[in-house]
Length: 517
Image 1 (spheres, rainbow, N blue to C red):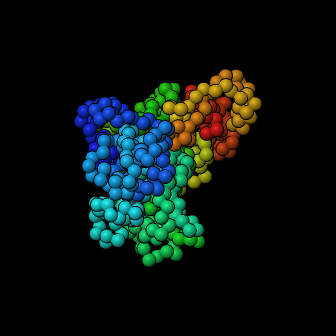
Image 2 (image 1 turned 120 degrees about the vertical axis):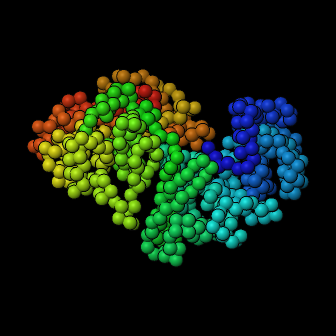
Image 3 (image 1 turned 60 degrees about the vertical axis):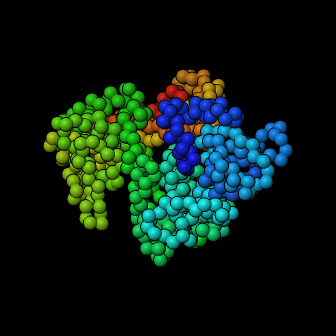
């Protein structure tokens, strides 16, 4: 996925209007113009030095290498045949005769980002003679700052296109590093060569957008940005920390209109869904979802809400932030700065005083969903008891605990089956508490390869792994304040499938690899 420009948009709009795929449109354009289509073009690095980043970005034109091409030609690809303005600007910067080829807009824009850097067209000095770009800023920055405004917008738009959850602006000695977190992994962003001299202005721009004090550089600050990128509306959480070089800025991207997930889409098996649906039909009780930050707990709870949502139920949520809109639900966004906290908004944060309120609510005709940070599902029980909730209340109220993790999903375009390396696999299985029985289940496993669609990582997207624990059968054990280790052992003996084994089943199904567990 890549950031969209006007020419790329024209291509996509045309495909939509004709109700055909982009591949089909490209074939029709090639037939109509006599231009050849390049599926996997190779970049011409010498040509990149000739054409400014601004020109490449504005026109979506990239120089490419063509085997056996006529000498003296400048071979160029673009999603659309060139118009007269594009031809004029190309001739301004190169005396070589252009030879044109067509390629999908996604591939063209990807090559521009990889070779000129994300936002390279915004900060380009060589393209100053080109027509002025329309500023995307609405808060009246002077023309001198317009390039930085556009650059920050480009970086954020590209982050949305990449599916990033976080963006980190990290000052280094002599340069500024920017990284996206995609599928839980930090990925360096290709950047323009001249970025370093804009570093202070970029950090200041982010602080202005987040309404932070731009003169305060010694202390950490927190803020938020409302950012619109096409149909995407983002609530961006901003935090700054002072480092030895300059302020580092971290952005957490929360898409307010992102598509909600159901239980099937988050990776729950039919058996897991059946267990959970049975408990969701209960008139009261508490269901806890546990796991570290970023493990998808809010997404899972939202899937549960959509499962039970009906006109005869009153649903109230207290969230920070509201990540998904649930039709018909009364969703409350906490605002600590005005005193609207979880506790006084409706008792949901799991501190000692509010934990017991939530438990008692579940015993008096309310079905309560909440999250907790524990390493495994039985750990939620001992955590509540450690927080001061009476064991008999915990044992009576908690109907289900689900521990979860997110693992990277194998890329469906490039993953391949390979014979099992028994020695290596057995070692990995033993580290997860399994062994020979699991090894005998498989002779082939899917492995990552890497392709353009997955940024050569071998993975694209993530899938949930779930550990489901029913506390009720162990009620008598819970009220004795048993240790977490003993509670876990008894739960496994009663049929609970631990996270490692649930993950192994995803490996056997070809969804992920054992390295992800």
